[in-house]
Length: 302
Image 1 (cartoon, helix red, strand yellow):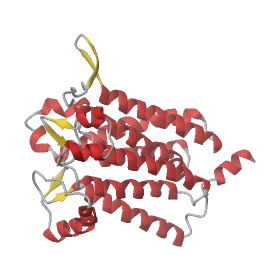
Image 2 (spheres, rainbow, N blue to C red):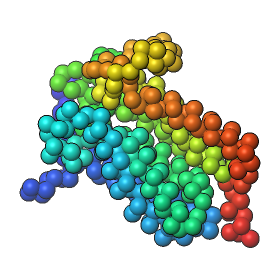
Image 3 (spheres, rainbow, N blue to C red):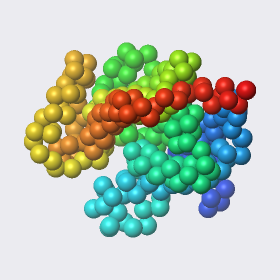
Image 4 (tube, helix red, strand yellow):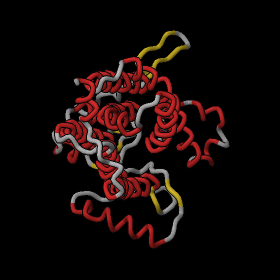
């Protein structure tokens, strides 16, 4: 009954060429996000070509940023295995690094095109979080980015299908499907951001809403994982992060860290939540957030 095989991470093999599910899923997420952004962009009078050009800038920058971020914090491994630095199909793309790369390239892109950064950022924010929700299933195919050990009964009590439960069986041990928790959180975020659009918020606040929502969920899910990028930091900072995560202990035990006492993704997540709040308040106080999300649509229609 429990002897089903794990899903092969290779979707297609053509001689020496292998197409991995990870790449297919990530590519599909990018295309769906592009389609959604293009549809919304038309409401604001923006041409489809703008978003196609944006993809050419942002996707490579995001991949490079995500990979460099991961490699940097796992340098002890990659300095011994330099050939694996470019092996992105094996996983190892840090979302925070991807965001840094995308934001930097996006800033150059909007300057070149002569449009406002936050106008474009608000339009694409729902696409980004939906892409992240879909992309987590690439981790599922690779049996990575999981949490600590759990029993099969625990997974069955979550009413998960058998094929998903079996994929969480790695070397005869079952693990938390943290990819699933984060994917569901991001899908909720996608729906909330679409709803926020209808409230016609001030420009930039959909993007900041995305950063805060994603980061809040990532903070709590990250505490369950066993493969976190970590470093040795001051005890007071570790205690602060552990205290903020402690409400989760009502339901779950935190995942073990192989080394270090601070999870980098948790620290980044808290920083982005705070940064989002600060930027919203400062931009309102300084009067630089007067334009609203749908103002550009009204201009286009007028």
